[in-house]
Image (cartoon, rainbow, N blue to C red; front, side, top):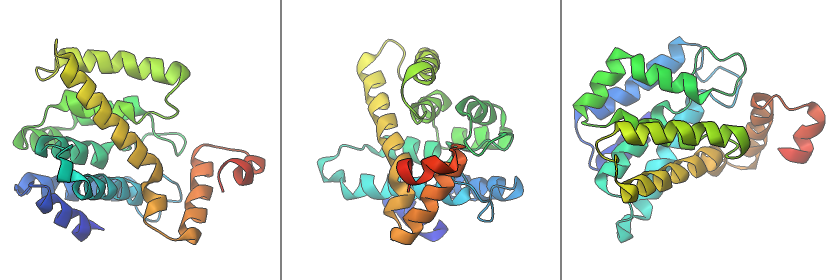
Length: 213
């Protein structure tokens, strides 16, 4: 998966070293924190890489209409790579607030984002928009934080069209987050992922067949 992502990174116009370093740093973080391929749960390194892969693949396949600017692809890439990194989680499903704390405080990641000239506030917005389910208290809390991020960003402060644009970009990422793993495999993989997703959501066994598999 790493090589496929790197090919898409180059195709997306991200040929600076910092983008390769971001990918390798993500893999290192997940592996060293026990969230690698051997971790039985939906939110492991495989999921993170699948979301990153499909985000870029789909955007490039549909980019004849130029709906995705080069800067959009950069933000999607960075947000997808780190959208679920929460090694302190008590259950499989990560907490977006913990993810935001990590990307805000990790010095190496901040340097990589600076090298790529990416605004961390926009990355936070995209990650917050992947909150699931996008309803009720979870949605209200995410929207409140998103408003703060927009205020803190020079790109979006007092610019409603930019805010709308990045919210749409976040919506795209949230859709990819839901379907990427299922789209990249056959039915047996989808069945296994559905079971892991049910585990991640702490569903009772009686719900697995009805609501997941």
